[in-house]
Length: 518
Image: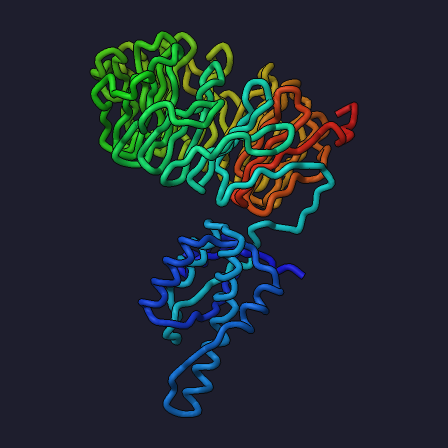
């Protein structure tokens, strides 16, 4: 029998939708609670088997020092109440699931009015909404903690993964075996990328550095490229002579890829820089920040090339159009804005949603802009007039993203309402029934032929659907925690998924018997 894992919430969050809170007191005063929290954060958390809980309960002794029999009874009762969550903590350390440990540590701090000790509050809505099983063959690639991302190399022979266990790792895609020592940082690795020749791997981390590694030996090629706070991202220029990094320290920086020395002064914002890119000619650098601006810089001198492009909230994204005559930005201020890249002036009035705008993309001829927002809608806008050209594409909760099909006849959206949806781009009507998960859908993508739709979710599964019928074509691809991403390999014989459960998994589609008419 398995002990079923439930996510934890503190009392202030009990108004969340569909939540039911129960309370279990924990023993100890403030000092011991702080020690428990520190221990939990260090050791990690996990799903606990009922047998582990029982064994840990039997092994734990409570040693109160009461003054009378009533105090003895009360003390024993408090000790009994504390055993289950303490056993959970012990099981957590055995399974090394950091995210659960942090949730547990945060949850134990509040107290009930009539209780002296901290309280564990358990949300009845499960993290993995049901007990899924899968018949599909797969190989697991193990990290210690959350796997933040994964990718195939161009040949599909190697897989790179990166994790909150402070490492990036390279695996043989045929066997699932590690083929190099881990690329080690001092804190969570937030991303990794191959260079064009696939001979180098660039990583970036919460340890305030980006690092460059030899993809055949695993040796560091350069000294760490140091910021003063966590590095959110990094990229090569096209010739791979420069590395562009951006950071929570309010700067983007450009480094010589041969020496690791900075080649420009820091490109400074007034808050953390969340994205940066070269233009196609690499004469300009576009950055975006939580300070409410996107900024354009001269890539040779580091001087500002334009006045800041201002929003009234953090800038969630910024891109050039193909001709690089326009810059498209979207923001938590509920707007999307289109700017002249030469003058910095807005080309049309702001495109307004009713909440945070999370995605925006041009269509191919740049006459339309598709946006997705936490207001529960995706919207299609005419670039010439700034008006919507379709009825709003409605979900029941936040829309995390929206994308055109290759021929731009369909629009794919995904949402916190537990669905991905496919729409007619000419009429705005739903083409298929909703593609349903049991929790928030975190992403969705077509395969190359756009006959399949791959989705991944908070419900601990990735799923494959027919884009013609909307029917699932495979059993759910199951992890033990949130599936953070998924992708097909080049010939679409395998799917790579990665999860908060500390693994990436490689799923074999060659024996899946997909319907021929999907």
